Length: 253
Image (cartoon, rainbow, N blue to C red):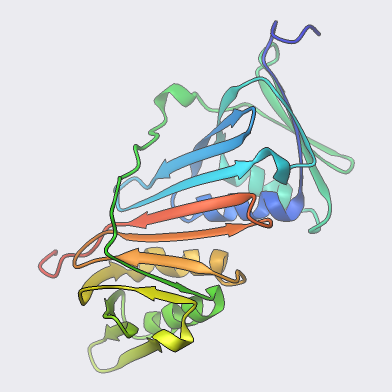
């Protein structure tokens, strides 16, 4: 088949990379448009209520095979997850697509699963906010995940507060409260000139904690009633994710 006559995509990735990609996007959406380019893959998604958004960039170097003509594929995450979940971490998942057949073939060992992509022209690909966040902290994924899970035990809304010395995660439930305070010395970094406080929904944050929990570093950025930004990377820095979450302004009902 002559290159350029029909779009071609031939990509191979380890199961653990594919699993992480699908798990991350699945926190926010059920389907996503994957943009494949020469240098790598980009995915931008926003949840139906426009509260949470993800920007994901994965360098071609993260994949074991990367032979593509630029293409955009709308895919149902559940279908990919079903196949990927059958493999072990080091198993290879192959993806092949050409426009002649209009079918994406996923291969795992002896299994071939053929998927017809969604119409990507109807898919909502968001424009990312250009935010200058006044405060940022970097901490271990495990520490942040534990704080969020503790907070979720007593409520749905979490308050993040920060000053030049401390980053605090606090939830006030109807009878109980949870406070997790990280002093500057216990964090990888803390940058904040003016104290700030903002409230967010744990319904969105706790599922994401499963994704970043094993990672060495998560960068959290916010300001007074600002959107929350979380940045993290995996696969030795070849996969980069930025996650945005709208704040819950105190009088939101």
